[in-house]
Amino acid sequence: VLAEIFDVFKNRIQYRYLDPIARISRGDTYLGEGFSIVSLICSMIEALQTARDGKVYFKAAPRGNYENQFELYGDGCSRFIFTKFLNGQHPFKQYFNDGLSDDFYANVRCSILHEAMVRNGWRIRVDTNVMISMMGGIKIVNRDLLLEGLNDYLKSYETQFFKCVNLQNNLISKINLIS
Image 1 (tube, rainbow, N blue to C red):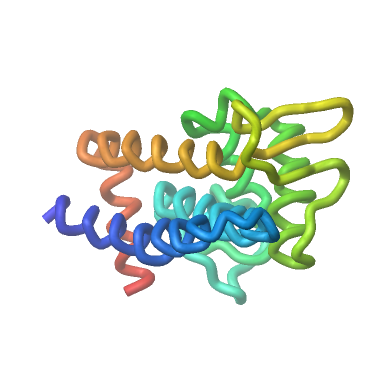
Image 2 (tube, rainbow, N blue to C red; image 1 turned 90 degrees about the vertical axis):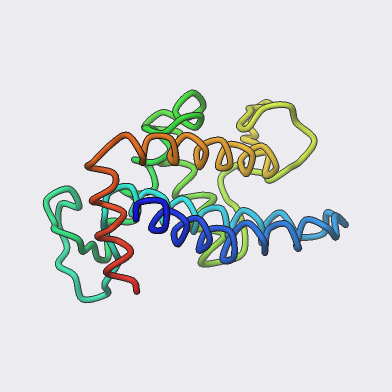
């Protein structure tokens, strides 16, 4: 039964995020694909963290402390969810800290999703050899390495899932809430 539940989750991630990213990446004209790819990655980050926590978004959910809400989270919690993932999950936690994850949330995630742009010195590139780098005041996120990090996370999460009852219960709760 646990394997079937995890397969449902894995298939949702594959069909809703990874396959579309792969299709977009095939073009590689470097004329905007990065924005679409990073937009999907940012959405995926929230989906992964809420699956890990057994939460689901509801517009009418009360504002407040995400940690204390059972199953629901609402407006105002996305920053916490997003930065919690970057600061706490391998391999992202080796690149992010509270300040950088908050900066990334505000100036990459929110800017891309709401305005189709990045702000405050952020750039999306593919020609660097690290996920996040700084070059004289410019902050560069390598979209391909960000995706590679998510693939590494998914492998690790799958291993953890089958060993941890809490993660199992949280994912079951999430699947039940979205089905």
